[in-house]
Amino acid sequence: MRARGPKIPSDDCVTTVATWSRSLHYRRRMALVSDSKTALPALSIVASPGKRRAILDLAREAERLGFPALACPSLGGALGLGVSLAHETRTIRFYTAIQGIYGNSVGEIGALASHTHELSGGRFALGLGVSHEPMVRRTGATMGPPLSDMRSFVDALRTNAKYGGELPPIYVAALRNRMLDLAGEIAAGALWANASFRHTSVQVERVSTERRNNGFYLANMIPTVIDEDVEAAAAINRRTMTTYVRLPNYRNYWKAAGYVEEMERIEQALSDKRTDELAALMSDDWLADCTLFGSPRTVLEGFERWRSIGVEPIAVMSSTNGGQVKAIGQLFDLYR
Image 1 (cartoon, helix red, strand yellow):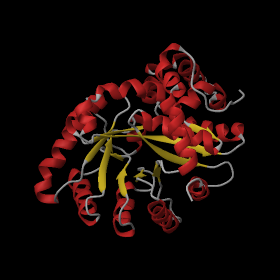
Image 2 (cartoon, helix red, strand yellow):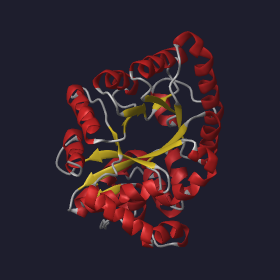
Image 3 (tube, helix red, strand yellow):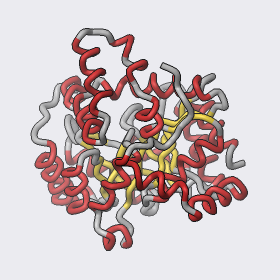
């Protein structure tokens, strides 16, 4: 399937996107980004084995360039990376995105979170999530009802704080509406990953204006590739998203976002063990809605689109010709 450049889908359910994109406000914001390059996204960094020193060097460069925040995925050890960032950086915010609640001790997570919160001078936040059943099963843990388990875990963390120390702000990973509602009740923010822009632009309205005005944090981790060769960039994101379309919870989420036919075709391919066809079954509209790829201007516009609905974009960088360090360097080059 031929990949086209990121575009806003034209069906009725994305009226909010299309209307905003045509607005004078949008054109003015794009001129600001292109001319001054001041609107930076947050940045996802992974402490890859053997490259941890290089990643910390990148974190310090992100701080120097003025990036607003660093997001630390569980891959590579989010809490361990957080401790290092508390020592290696001075001003930039950072948070786990995400730390799973299954297979981990409340006491240990609470103590590490408190430690990092204290040493960083309050720059750290603890992003928590239930992850996905296949991933949890591989850890040997048992996954219960996600909503009640998340509520219980956060309650236990706060109860245990009298022993483990003051906790940082807590963010909750929330793809679906009910978890987003819970985040609004028990947390200081909500995190998405690989979210549909058109769906999120409506979903954020579930968070009250008062909560958002008082600093309730919203952010989304976005697979991002910068390359003028749009087809090559799209192919990298298709490869990245192959991991996620295998997960039932994500497919159900994307169905709720309006991508029923795409997800049903993917489910049939998975059932038939035709996994080599997954990338070809990802529609152009879906890929452009859930990821960013293409020229520097296209990517910058994508970041700004997310920011316009009150969601901080988190760049999860990949490259057509290198690994994480190369990809993050390409992002830095946009702001140097």
